[in-house]
Image (tube, rainbow, N blue to C red; front, side, top):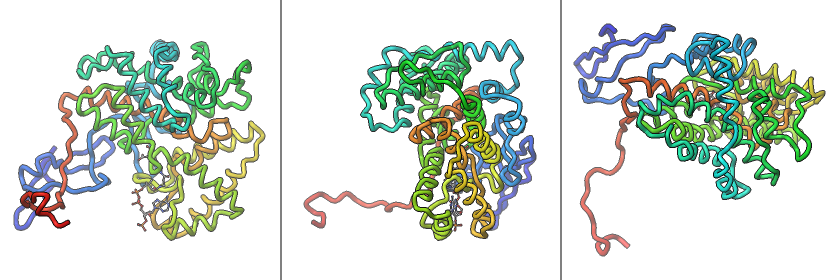
Length: 431
Ligand code: SDX
């Protein structure tokens, strides 16, 4: 790094190193800013701030580029599958035959939940949101596998392969068990002779005495959905995972925090909100134009549109849009919500309000249509996003935990509260 980042404050110049990434992104290294100048940087929402150096995922928002460990998302979507891409994201290289089969075996053989977890499910009210249950039970895995959750970084890293396989596998069983508990259905045990996603759909959707039968390529569509959600640089939930991991917290605790962050409607909760938006437009009989006007006037957000980083079409949305059509064709289903989504997309992409703000469909815009078509209940849409994002969260936990120079994340603030004042006894306060 050479010192040619100069910041002038008043009549004084201060030099700061410039950091350049492998794709040519540049940053001013401000780690000495306060010591040199007494100033801190202020960037609410971190839109202009790099929190870390990472080798996992690269996004170019202006050009709509997304790559995992250098491989374009379009090529992974075309040629890979969720578990192989998860291996790539977590370990940095595409696996060979031996390592892929061992990785798959390690995950598929870990689908059974500890029988002591059963009372935990029964303890939740039936109205409990599945994301609340998922976050709670993922955190509880640290109690069933304490040897992998010591909060001793070196020890926990040493068990990463085992702990990550448990998490990748059991999130499916927790999600399926949550759904079946809410419907009063008996649990379906994991069957490690099935693929990752087939086994999940079987645990989730099998009826008593009628095993789930994949007649419409649902497992392939869901596998692609998981792959497309696997990682996405320093988004809100991944940054949360890194924040928690920076304190030395174990894998399960850190991922549980990421699940909670993903729950919000501005982030992973948007896929549910898109379907609710499309269904309300469908019910109103409107062609979508009233909703576009409401979004333009600031009365509503066009859910599934816009992105902090993509100022171009989200490449995942393009792939999911095509997948939605293919799943519906296979099922022979005409979903009016897809027609409404297409109309909204066309209207928005021709409207200056959206064009001037570079608002394009994001990953959530079409994903709900696919999930709905393969029978996933809307309430579980964000849970599906979470299952897909597990490899990315774990790769980030691993990356920060392996970095000997990583420090606890502790941002500063600009204080805007009261200046110093003396305590007033109760009897002397204005009543
Ligand atoms: C995900 O970060 C990631 O990588 C996330 C993610 C991942 O894989 O992890 O990609 C997954 O979270 C996708 C985003 C899902 N959320 C939604 O679809 C919710 C709807 N979108 C918006 O809430 C919004 O676009 C955000 C939250 C996604 C981004 O918000 P920003 O970057 O803070 O943008 P902003 O609020 O500053 O908006 C800039 C302007 C504003 O208008 P003006 O003040 O300039 O007049 O654009 C407007 C906003 O009002 N705007 C929208 C809009 N999104 C932004 N107007 C209408 N509809 C929208 N969806």
